[in-house]
Image (cartoon, rainbow, N blue to C red; front, side, top):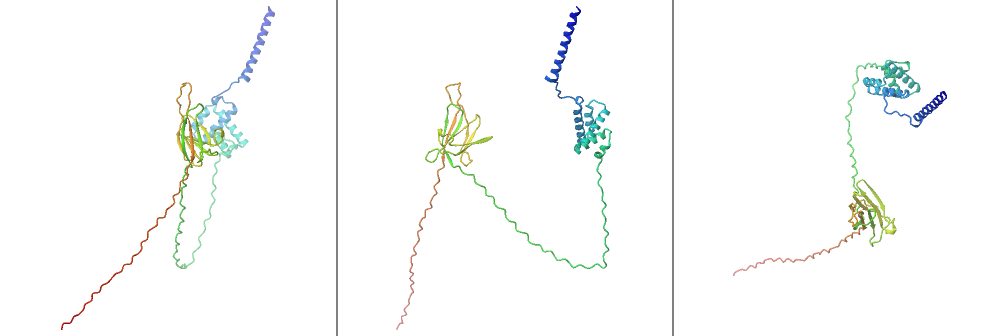
Length: 322
């Protein structure tokens, strides 16, 4: 009977030890406790030192002792213990050569708690400006009698320089489009909706290497014709997004030639399949504008006509009577 009880006690003791060891392994390595949002009174010593430095820096900046005292009371410790810890942090920071603003803040905070050491005096002293006496010159006695100075000549003022006029700014005109839209077709076929552009020359042949700009409200993109020769040398396309209005510009000019291009559902006999419309745009160069040739209209010259003026002088004959 005694042997059975001893065996049970040994098994219980072994089980308890295994359970204790397993619990420690889980608690320390598998799932250790993580502290978040702890109170200042629960901080470890190294973090408490950082907390005291932050309180000292805040007091040096705000100069509000009521708020600083409230933050110290959050540590829930004896004021003398807190003062001793502030002194230790200050002297350790001085020994480590921390920046002067931090050392001045810690020294001021420690002094406010009633503790001042020899190392803190350097950072607590306020520099007093040294006043250097300036010698007052002794005026020389004026000679007697005073000489009479001749009158100064009247100043002559030179005429002001004529300002140079600023150059006149001539605005650069916006380049006119070099292409015209000659066809715009709505295409309904399966696949993603696209803007399909074909650029042709005057004879209707595709022109590769022409830049096409696609512009919308929050961005822009471009492509070059001729990258898909199986669809034509002057062909290029761009995938459209639903609910966005696009504008198209061709060539060097950024002036849109087509605006408000949107995709919309196409009528379909199958309700389960939705097809969105694409746009096929065809452009050609702008034909040259003929320059009118000025015509010279002959001006008829009038030939002067000679006018003969006949002056009649009356003659009188005297008749003497017998």
